[in-house]
Image (cartoon, rainbow, N blue to C red; front, side):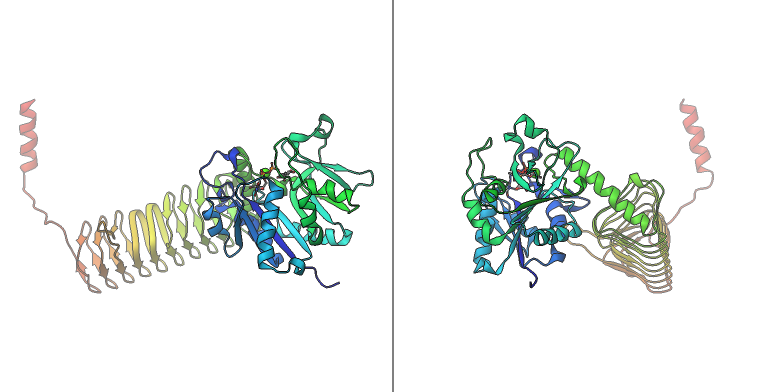
Length: 451
Ligand code: UD1
Ligand code: CA
């Protein structure tokens, strides 16, 4: 048989009431990425013939984030079965005739831990068993909120009963619906048409198609998977638990690939954080999205990095902040209370204390003295500061952009630089010092007399 083609329908139209949020549930992030994006990332390597995301009204933000996958609005959300029906309509428009497709993969937008390997395994299992419907099963520690899988004596799937509709006996079943369903395309429309709303929630349950299929003598099966992978996120508490679980996975993967973490449980990563070999991460470091740290670099405690590249053997922190567009080349040192934004520091450059470098370039080997500030913003526009190689910027210098400092130049401490400094020049831009011999002693005497 030629490889069967499948389309994916992802359900994300539910209001996510239990999150008590103004933003759609699937937009809540885990390790720096919205839940729905985690799911799409797991799905795409399997190259579905089409992917449709079913969203609710006023969820344009979800449509934007899932693009180029198509989205369709389900209004009002009448239940998961109705959502799949809505998704099928979009697919029918797109893949006419739908006969192109052999099977449909239905996923719930709130299960971010699914992996490509699992999805691929389930697709193979359905084909191997020639089941009309295959449902993922799991045994979570607390099964109470999930639909229970009722099995026949031969171990095949008989029907699914939702938590709200389960009898005491059914509630005692530990095997539950993990939320992934693979359905043979030719049966789906007919099965969905037969689903009613005669249940506790008055919704069109997708899960009812299992019992209906059995009545038509169609084979239904379940494959049990580790509960961790199928965790559904419905509340902020589950979101926090999911975050913790994802962080553990990411830290473990980083350490396995050669990163040292002194106190891994205090380091927070994003899914896209890239850490090279022999990188050392001290306790209490946070990585926002888009960070790459190259081999041998050290990130010291209490640093916060996002959208930044840290070059080989560079050193960041303690207490440093790297904002988007910060690029540190090899062996750069960025020390305590230094903030870098949209700035490139050339190899071996140092900014060790109390500085702000924004919209700037710093040449290799240049030293930025304590308290140096690039004044990049006039309240309306941003301007650039360009500093050459092997220059020296004295402490407490204000560089009023747009401005440049040439190679090898020295800027005296306390300067306010408003004009370009030529290469190899010494620039001093501060009030001149006046010394009045003996005056201090005189002042002290006068003050004491007053007492
Ligand atoms: C659902 C399953 C349950 C399973 C559990 C796994 C049904 C009826 N129940 O329950 O068997 O154990 O997931 O996590 O399917 N959605 C829509 N449109 C709707 C309703 C829901 O798109 O009209 C979406 C939601 O946004 C969500 C997904 O479908 O992403 C699941 O809905 P949710 O309300 O979370 O279902 P559960 O009660 O968790
Ligand atoms: Ca759910």
